[in-house]
Image (cartoon, rainbow, N blue to C red):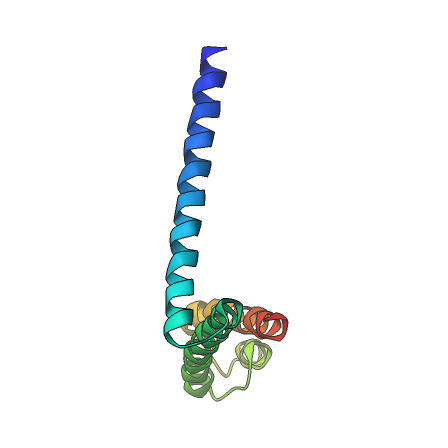
Length: 116
């Protein structure tokens, strides 16, 4: 029973900390919104949109570097080039997986931008 009380206390402390952090964040957002005469929710949404657009720009720049390096348009074209022997698989291995992950992340960010 003692362990359960400690676990419950730890959980309550964590919840209190999260609640405290959330109140602080909302206070900062409210302060900035008032300073610029904005609706706090609109400020938060616009901040998220800007963050996602910046992240998308970085991802697209990383994608551009890889596709330019191999003269392809996407991960499928890179895979085809490797299968045809135009690119050594050993040389393109890391870039292949990086490009695949970047393309997936790009799609996820685009979906999030549609929801914000």
